Image 1 (cartoon, rainbow, N blue to C red):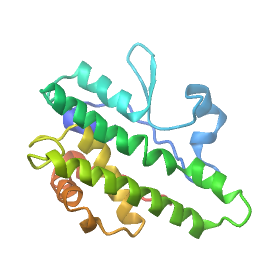
Image 2: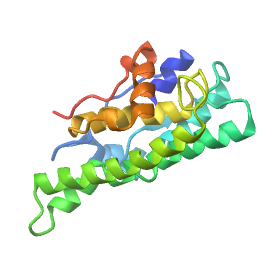
Image 3: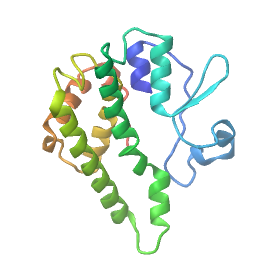
Length: 197
């Protein structure tokens, strides 16, 4: 969401919510009163409507501030950008958040290394598929063309996470190249995910 806000030049009142550790504010009663899922991001619109889920928020931002567009113009390109974004958000990232790791560690015989192995497995499997999808129809510097889209907004943080897991991005040449183009833009570089403390 922060990348989309930066690309659009939009400012919001921001409150940092921690998601790691036993004292994570995302699991606290105050945040859960706002967002019962206890997940980030969460965005309160000017009229007080709570929006959750990154993709829904990014599309909302694209609708209220159409320039620059975060979805390509052509129907097939828009659908492809959404499909790549969903492949990452729903099929990779959904298996990696702290609450999944916490649940895994609560099972007998599962420790930090097993959770890290779980994460590496799902990121590798997911990015293998995404690399194949992108390689079939990539025509520019980004996932779809020469302008970052919703697909790049979701892909870039996943590449940061993959590198943190010790995965070599060069095994996915299109993804690695796209991540480099993203990192060259301040909206991406200045809003890259930060390491948990």
